[in-house]
Image 1 (tube, rainbow, N blue to C red):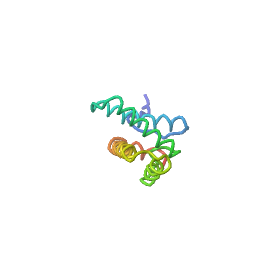
Image 2 (image 1 turned 90 degrees about the vertical axis):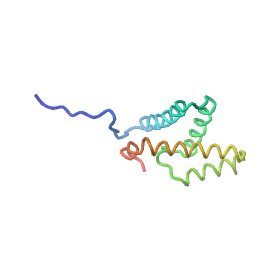
Image 3 (image 1 turned 45 degrees about the horizontal axis):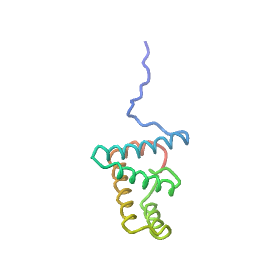
Length: 118
């Protein structure tokens, strides 16, 4: 009898394809939004958070976990100066991004560091 190599389900694996990168990014956003649902956030607030996060992801143009604080600063400045959104709207997006990245650090930091990227 020989022993088989077993990988823990919880062990992060390296991402190889563009689809795997997109799926992992989607999982991160979904888990953040599910945590909001679990905390009792209203559907409208969840939808607003989702919209803000994906707007940032599109602006960034690369995996969200590779972003740095200056990327968020550029995004928020663009929202205010180029798109001319209200101060309160940009502030709400800033809070959403801050909560999202706090969530990623608290829950997924190990997984993110175990995968390719920054």
